[in-house]
Image (cartoon, rainbow, N blue to C red; front, top):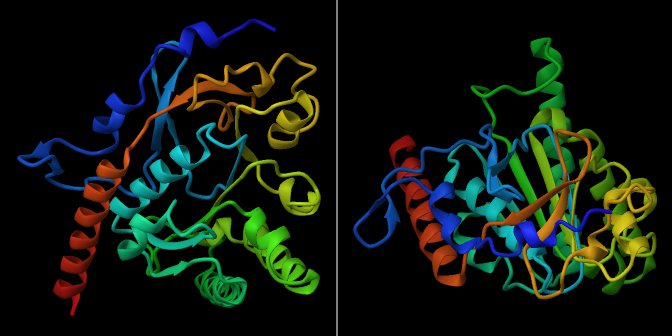
Length: 295
């Protein structure tokens, strides 16, 4: 395998925030969100320094890798884009509360370390999904559109293992996995986008029947080729694509499988806590203003 670390090692994600937001007004705030969830999401740069943008509508994404590798960085980029997209609603699940906590004011629902709240939320999402399919059936259509009567929903889950393998009993963990599997399997056509992050999505963390439904994957550094294949899919390490080759001193570098169908080396853009806070405050104001105008 060609060692690609040298090409991306010197790229800084912090300078890429301007590609996510639009030209700023004094104080560093974007003047206008100007984004839609139907627009590709800027996630960083490739090994040649070219921007990488991933369309997430009608897609689901699984993010994996060792702690500190960049999972939460990519997840927050996606949530930031969704928060600034006034045509998207947010459903956030975060067992640690702090990884996605800054976006709480932008979300319809925020679930912390509470498995019963998580189950109730996924059950509600299942009802929403079924109602949307009933609407499409009457309308004679197979999927939602940009100008539809209902908005897409981003379901973002940080550290899925907390809900699927750590808290609660075997029954509640299996119910969580089953409900999530249904959303991933059926939700795409009605605008439900699931983006889930975990350290190692092995079968004891995420059942294989759920894991294999994620067509798009991103593997940040993993300690073994086996772990990398668990994220990307079986056989990629044998073909020369393993996130085990990523340097532990180069966080934010990962292998992304998206539109091309083969892994692509990327450096995720980085939003620090202050940047996330500014974007979240601005997005919450935009959402509040829109609700007030609609009232």
